[in-house]
Amino acid sequence: MGALRDAPPAALLSSARDGDRAALARMLSLVERGGEGARAVARTVFPEAGRAHTIGITGAPGAGKSSLTSALCRTMRDAGEKVAVLAVDPSSPFSGGAILGDRVRMGDHTLDDGVYIRSMATRGHLGGLSLATPEAVRVLDAVGYEWVVVETVGVGQVEVEVAGAADTTVVVVNPGWGDAVQANKAGLMEIADVFVINKADRAGAGDTRRDLENMLSLGARRELPPAVLETVATTGRGVAELWAALQEHRRLVTESGVLARRRAARADEELRDVVTARLTERAAALCDGQAWDDARRAVLDGSLDPWAAADRLLD
Amino acid sequence: MGALRDAPPAALLSSARDGDRAALARMLSLVERGGEGARAVARTVFPEAGRAHTIGITGAPGAGKSSLTSALCRTMRDAGEKVAVLAVDPSSPFSGGAILGDRVRMGDHTLDDGVYIRSMATRGHLGGLSLATPEAVRVLDAVGYEWVVVETVGVGQVEVEVAGAADTTVVVVNPGWGDAVQANKAGLMEIADVFVINKADRAGAGDTRRDLENMLSLGARRELPPAVLETVATTGRGVAELWAALQEHRRLVTESGVLARRRAARADEELRDVVTARLTERAAALCDGQAWDDARRAVLDGSLDPWAAADRLLD
Image (cartoon, rainbow over all chains, first blue to last red; front, side):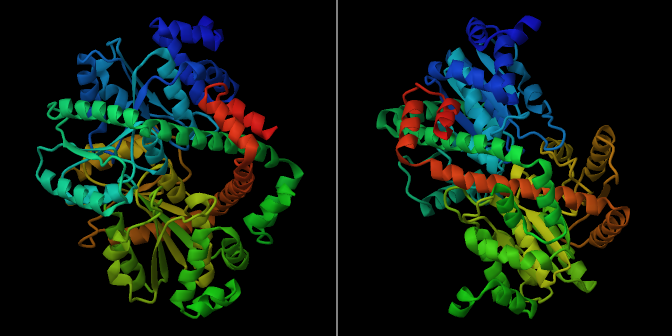
């Protein structure tokens, strides 16, 4: 463990490629933690990444995302694919802890060498999950996973952004009228490449399909209209069809040039976010010392509003 | 409408205090939109705010937050209180649109002058909902609403942060084992001042209470241990007890000095966020021109990772 802790990223990458999971876990921990360690990993893996196709899976808590991810992994493994799963968990703002629910539920894969599963939270990474996730994906990509599944725990702003930044985004809903409406409210209509109505053996799957198709027809025209599939993750029903749809989407976006355009747009977005993160570091340095104390006191006693106080600090 | 559009914030505030809802709506739109209009509103209302007590209401989609908020408003109105509700909706990242579901469902209050209800999204506000929400709350506070309820649509990172920044935070869960676990995962245990088990007429309310109390006993010790209440929002059961618990919490935090400490910490946090937002504006200015084109091209062709490219831009 001591050797691993001191190993340079290039050595970790080489070990991870030889199947050393501890080395891979170490790289991902460095990414989560941010700072110079994460930078060093990023420099090492960046030129080695670009071959993996990423699948984002999002949907409300309880929709069955973890079961579906697990069933999908099994199907992909049966097809001989190497798969990594990042269960992305905006950690509790106070404790910084992510609980292990997902990992436990997906436990049937933990001894399978072709599947790597990791719950990921940010512990100090400056750019939060929006920046840490693409960096973690590049680590898995550079290590040789051809498919990287990014599963989020919910449908908040950050989670939608993270899942929407995948090459193919799957939105999981359940039967019942409310779910399609909630998906729309959460901004999921625009990011979905594939809709999955999971738990489709329950009443209302047809209604949900109709609602989704209605909302899609009302929305902006898409280059590739999203597929709507039905699954029952717990029995495996529909999972082979989902896998087929994912391969088909990958083929279509690759051949049409849509994927290259999306990735270029994402690269721009990421660079912008990194510039912001660097400037945020400088802001943190400003929020200290006598000038900071004066500014916060002025806000507290009501003599300056926060924007006026910030401008005084920055000048 | 033309007169309203050109009215200075002080005139809008004065009209809103006289009961002009259009003037109030105009101020809140200015806050949502950000920029100089929002700054002008902030300068005007900042010295006038500080009397309202804010209640954050959060929980998973479908937990019944809107029904509970509506029932709570009715009880508060019966007690003679003036209440404003902000339904905070991180708008779809693509369309910028918030749908009106909450406003429609809470329609029974729209003709009651003592209740003001508004769905709020950010349309361009630089600091997002985390900064726009306290500004909107100060508008309602300055206009004379003594209670401001901030209801979020879900439990993503931003929503939890926004609801957790209230003076009293209510977390709504439903009967059933999974809900307490999901609440824990979403970071809700640490921010809750009051837990409400809504739909408590369904099976499993006792189990949920036990789960919550177990998790609370395992967590960090709190200055004021959260209350756990049961409601059926649709029939009004337990809503009077919730209102009593909110008044009691307000009394306790005010008298103990906890509220003053929390507000000072939040003011620091807000000032920090405003400094970051200002620096982000400067970042946006950097992401343009020849140097930007060179940096993004280097990332796209794989010769520089994003952090190295950002540092080159900033130097």
